[in-house]
Structure formats: structure tokens, C-alpha cells
Image (cartoon, rainbow, N blue to C red; front, side, top):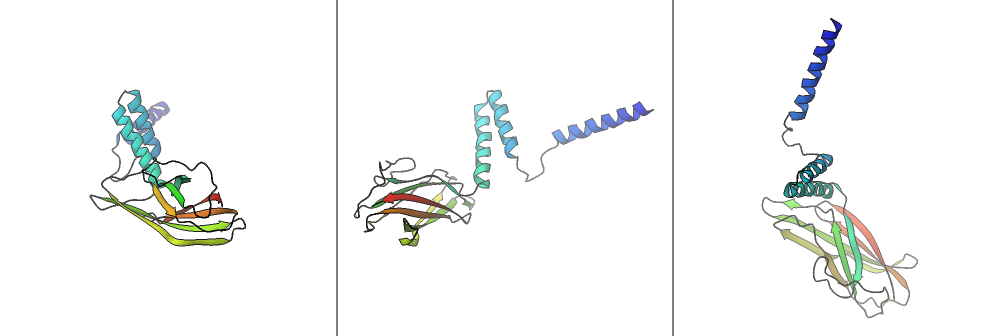
Length: 196
């Protein structure tokens, strides 16, 4: 009698587990990051590279949306960049009083506004020049402004701009950059050391 009850219980449990596994996902529920990565691995194991790439892209998009704003690159360049990843880094951090500072930044995990056909996103950059003691020697809020309208959610954007000659006395300085994401309403701060 007891074994028949246990058998019915186990059969019921098995049916419940199978139902959960094959039950369609609730409307609007998105797959987890782990599920997306599992899909990518399964598709790769089945020699379905396109399906694997779509799953990996979904995982990348999820990480992008869930991460705070950050910078993958922040440096001085020899001259204005030509485009994303197309720049020549400055070989040293020594400037004279009449040299402009060419700045190159690559933001990541910024937000997008989608209006049904176009993605809108943008940044504002504040600049401050700090001396060795941390005293602000110049700068500007909203020093430069970047606005983008694209047909795709472009995740390869560079921010490059020029800080005109500073006419500072000889010494060590930091160029403090505060990058504001207009969509996510988040900011990231990066300091670039330099010497006059």
C-alpha cells in the first residue's frame, strides 16, 4: 500500500518536472544570461554558428544593458581620431604650454532610446585640470556634447575632442574627465595624468 502511494507520488512529481521543462516561457519574460550562454554552447556543439552568434549577442546585449557606464579606452592621442579604434596614441605625456590635448574615449554600457525606428543616445563631458595638490586650475562643465541618432544600437562609439593649449606653469597635472550618459543618467570619471 505504501509503495503504491510512493509510486503515484513519484509519477506525479515526474509529470510536474516535465511540465515545467516544456512549459512555454511566460509572455514578456526574457531568458537569463545563463540560458543565453547555454543556448550558444548548444548551438556551437551542434555546428550552428549563426544560432550560436545570435545567442552570444543576446548575452552581450544583456550584460551591456545591466552594466553601469564605463570606459574601455581613455588616452591622449597625437591628433584627432579618424573613427572608433582608429587613432595614434601619444607616445608620452609631456606637453609644452602651447600644445593642444587630443583626448580619445571609448564609452561602454551606455543607454539607448528607441523610438520604433531609430536609436538615440548621447554624452556630455565635463573637463577639469587639477594640479599635483588636487587644486582645480581650470575646466568647464558641459565642455563637449555628443548626440547620436542611428538605425542600429551602435556599441562602438568614440568620443574625441581637443582641449586647447592651457598655458599652465611647468608641473604635473591631471585632466579629470566626467562622462555623462544622457539616457541612463549615469556618469563615469577618469583622470589622465600629464606634464607641462
